Image (tube, rainbow over all chains, first blue to last red):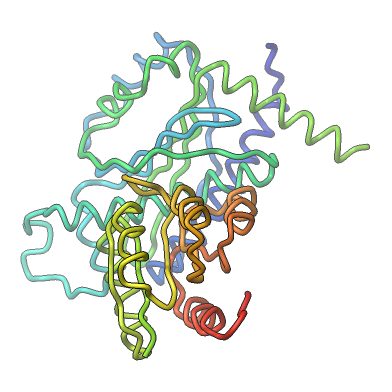
Length: 207
Length: 123
């Protein structure tokens, strides 16, 4: 399938709508203003993707992932720097931070809380997209891990790696000084379905 | 006072829901998956059920189907992260009396609970 610039622009707008919804949810949960960047949408071959991963750096992130299947399939990540995880959890649970801050142990309860936050956020993003497309997805249970971005990318299933759509956006939680990212990764087959569905919606709206 | 069964695999969410409900004098019982939730619904006969969708061991959709098949008429409120219109439609079709999205908003949940506890109360 030939991908025209307007297709990528359409996907960028779609992701923008989803991230806007996600940011609204995160703002409600944290009581903070969320600043967003315009999503970057790119298509990579597996080789290019591997090179990209090696260039991204090795900062460690707390990452929540969800697989999605249905009208199209792929993987979505919600990630924040690992040393910001306690700050976000404290803001949402209302717990008072202790003096030693980031040195506190990260327990399974903390991981579970973060997993639920990421789950709500990713569902907000993906659900907005499918509502626009009048489609439906089913999701896996969320998983939590701590890793750098190259390692996260390595976890993406082979089925999504023939040609890869990477949609990336940054969310800055102003009061907490935390910058997070949403990554959405899809293989070529799903990407083509997504583009075709968008073109249908566009044609319907013009009719 | 009414007893509410909370079914959610996240203890974080169950805690939030329990605190919200106990503040309003409801009694809560909890299950961390749909299968256990179904057993408790049959055994404990709560006055209403709050169920998540994405869970291990019988997800929320399967739970709704199961209670429909068993003829259990306890009102069910779905409380989920899934904001998809199609999911909402499916849940209502499967007999859910209300469909709410996370994050939990007490101002939405409490009226929804009170409404379904009324005789023939629908949202």
